[in-house]
Image 1 (cartoon, helix red, strand yellow):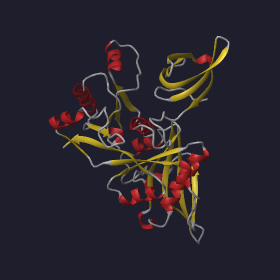
Image 2 (cartoon, one colour):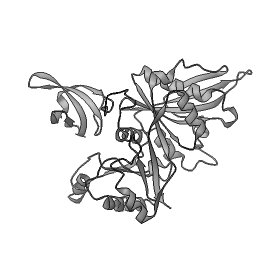
Image 3 (cartoon, one colour):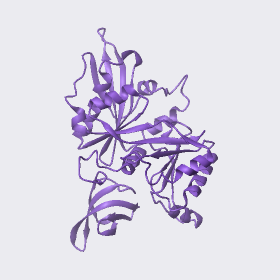
Image 4 (tube, helix red, strand yellow):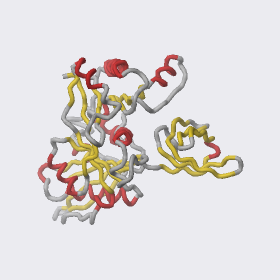
Length: 347
């Protein structure tokens, strides 16, 4: 049974007054005694002892249409954060600040998500203004800057667009503040979405390659990602490995070359992480000497097929706007741009 966590969209079947009742909504808070959900009929409190079945649901669609197209950018940013989440992460919002000031407990998962992983990856070391934090944007940025300074990290904010291309409502007020404080945006990263079954296609594997699925990343994978466990380039390995393994559900898919002499070598690998009934395809890497031979396509199709077999209908991948080869590959498999994001840093 899925353990309810704040931010999840769930259907919970539970017993109440001698009857079985279903609640569909988003978990606002949860502990070992109760689950509080925001549903269409208002806030519902469910005793953990009364829960019979918990079923995770994808984010609610924002309009009629194909599931992978009608999800909100905010929901996709939350999913993306959930599958690349460092241990050092806190939610910045008015409720949590009041609880901290009164030394009481609070774990409201809304507002700004502050993340730090000793500088390993931009996403894991940036603030994500997901929703309005209940305090002025300038004050929120002040707190975020101090939070990163305490960790000897430069402040960075991950801002994102609406589907139409304008800045998301939670990010739009920051534009003028960024200019005043000398923040400038990076190049864009495109969030791409696709139907899992369509992306899987026939899942053909080029001759001489074998697709291997494992439930963890191993030394050859980290070598391929440029984060070896030992030797030159090993700095940051532990933090990177923790990010790779941060989702509750993830799979490593590898393309293995089978040579005539019986030896084998890693050609490429990709990670499939699953959260909220979405599959996130990430960390795709192919041996530079063996690119453009179909391995990348085979890996993404294998990941898509694996997701579809697990009941996942929608996929997301995030590709830097300047990475034309990767954008071309994902486009061929049916992925299309959903929205964009940037990292605002001090110039």
